[in-house]
Amino acid sequence: MAGHSKWANIQHRKGRQDKLRSKLFSKFSKEITVAAKMGDPDPDKNPRLRLAVKEAKQASMPKDNIDRAIKKATGGDAEDYEEIRYEGYGPNGVAVIVETMTDNRNRTASTVRSTFTKNGGNLGETGSVGFMFERKGEVTYPADVGDADTVMMAAIEAGAEDAESSEDGHVIYCADTDLNEVSSALEAELGESDSTKLIWRPTTTTEMDLESMQKLMKLIDALEDDDDVQRVTANFEASDEVMEQLE
Image (cartoon, rainbow, N blue to C red; front, top):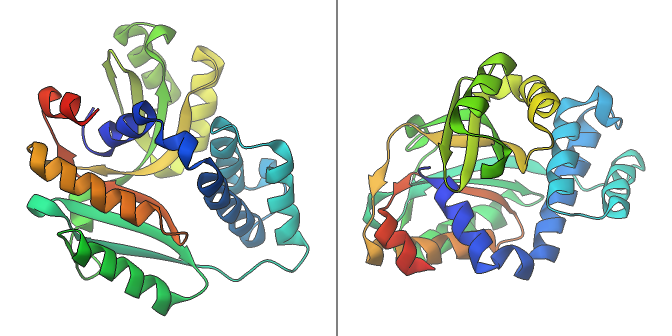
């Protein structure tokens, strides 16, 4: 698996998810509230909300927190958040997409720009790196759900576009607009997924050595620590040897 999928694996193995559990839950709550406010508060009638709730549950977010986030949207006291995507370059010219949700555009822009600068990168204009990615739906399964052929067949029948299998597990990709339908069909065949979400999938990658990867990790860590930042994606590629040294 290339790009940000490897980064997600690093986060998991390092236990970063546990350390930032409250911060993650805060980001999920914000996404749920915005999705509920923009559409129907019933997840069954609101695809974006349904996806946000599912992702939160897969991260073990308590049901009470999820319900509270939805009620906040319907209660009329939810903040007005603006979704803004920033694009830039990290160490070794790696392309980075930063998705934010903010109630203060100037504050967020200033913080994101400063974080890039302090960590060996630079913020670019909108569209400066976006052409190196495609918006896709991603569904992941553990390795023991079946062999590569079984998963590929299930993916094809579900209407997915591609599937990649390795010892770490299976990653299935589909058109972003088909994610709800594809994930439901996959779960009927393979069971509950490990994760279901919208991603930016790199169409081209930048090879990273150990030093560049260490710098990139610092940049991504700093960006994700910002409460306004929802997700960070980078189009890096690194050898297994480099990845092992990062653990």
